Structures are given as C-alpha cells and as structure tokens.
Image 1 (cartoon, one colour):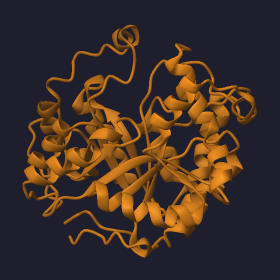
Image 2 (cartoon, rainbow, N blue to C red):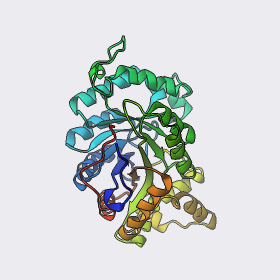
Image 3 (cartoon, rainbow, N blue to C red):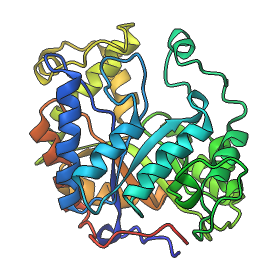
Image 4 (spheres, helix red, strand yellow):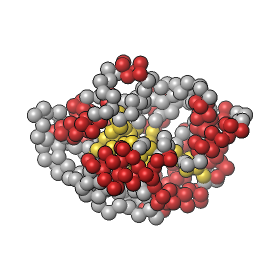
Length: 349
C-alpha cells in the first residue's frame, strides 16, 4: 500500500462518535443521532465511522461499540464501521472475536476492530464489568484475539478453540493509543495505528514516529499506516466555528473545576452566556489550541499541515456540537474544505 498524499484533495476523513448526551436530551436521542449522522457522512464520502467505549458516563452513550457497529453497518452500505475502540482488558478476547467475526461475516470488508487498553471507567464500574486485567497483558490479549480470526489471506484460523464465525472471517484490526508505547506496540505487531490527539496532543508526533520506527511488515500490512483523531469543528467561518466549539470548551473547564464528568454536557446557550475567568481562558487555550477549529478556508490550510506535522495518513474527526444539524453541517464543511476523495483508501496491504 502506498500511503495517501496529504494534499487536500487526497485526505481520507473518518468519524469518531461518542454519542454525546447534551443537557435536555437523552441517551436514546444521542444513539438515534448516531445512526442519522452515519448515513449522512457516508454520502459526504467519509472513510470510516468508529464508536468509542465508555462506562458509567451518562454524558456519553457509546457503552457497547460492538452493538452499535452492527446498527450503523445495517443503515449504511459503503462506509467502514467499527470500534474506536473496544477496551480489551474489559472483555475476554474470545468473546470479542465472536462478536466482530459475526459482524465481518454479515458485512464483509467493512468492519474495523480498534483495540484500546485504557480502563474507560472508574474502579467501581470496573468491578461491575468483572474486569480481570489491569492492561499490562494487553499485547498478549491482542495476540490471543488475532489467533481466533481467519488469517489476513482468508485462511482458516488454526486455533484449537473455534470462535465461530471468526475462524473464517477477519475484520481489520487496529491498535489505539495515546502514547509512544502504544505506537511501538502497533508497529511491532505490524498493525495499523490510531492515535488519540484529542486526549494527548503533546505526544502525537512522537507516538506516530515510534510506530513508524518500530514497524515490522506483516501479513496484515506491508507498510505503516496511521490515523490521527482530533477534535474538529467546522463553521461557515472562523467566528461561527469558535462559537460552536464553545460547549466542548465549557465541558473541559467545568471538568477542571471539579464538576463530575458524568453530568449531561452543557448546551450552546450555556456556553454562550458563561462568564470565563482569565484562568478559564488559559485552560481553553490549552485544550482547544492543538485541535482543528475554523471555517472551510482555515481548515483547508490547517488539515494538510496537521497531517504533515504529525506524520499520520488519515484524519478522524471527533465533533461535539449540541445541535445535531449543525454537527452534520460541520462534517460536511470539513469534507468540502479538504476536497474529500470519494474512492477511499486501502490499508490492507
């Protein structure tokens, strides 16, 4: 595979969805919005639609990315769909193989299985999940999981235990992370890598660099291939984009002030009328400065520069806007800003 050019006309775009629940709305509505957004970004030419795993967090409705992967794949036809990601220490690898093998069997060639090691929750909820792993054995759990799937060439699994139908079907497996260690692991395994810039922007370039440095060609992938996920908000112009990012900025400020993360997310009106202190504005600059916010002209310049600086091959956008139509429009404007290619990009060789 030849990595895609970072010229604007060739940038592959994808979506990371956490199904945000805004104050005054419900988890049910957030999940219905997910299905609608997936259908619409598919028409815009997006490459992938991934959903995260969060637990005991009422403001984020994506607790079961495997279930939502099936739902989204069922209402779309061409976009790749998957997890961003399944937090593997929370689940037996055998069960994950059964789930995603089933999804791949029903939607062949369209399923991505992104794997993370973070807890994704608090210690009390971890006990409720019967979490048996601290994450230290993450590499071993990935290896076990891969063994249950068919080979990258379609050959049947050689595992003594048959994780039906995974033994004859293999989704595209990704390693997710936010540190150089995760990049190194993805490289050593010869798997594609997705980096969470929205969580730890200061380590993006070095983590993707570690991935490329340690990459070993494998049956899954001959050359390194990476996605960088960033918070992205597009408006009709820069000023409108800055307003639309307000609720996510306010969420961060309130979190730093000690407001529980599980509270419903603030509305656009709350963000518009909130009185920020000087310290709050410093927090906003720290949080939003490394992300991608602006009108189409600004993003047309920023996005290619961002990918060139980070060394990533694809951009995945996490967009949190309370108004659903404004959120859809943000993804449309981003696609227009980079002249989205609609023929997709292969990472299978």
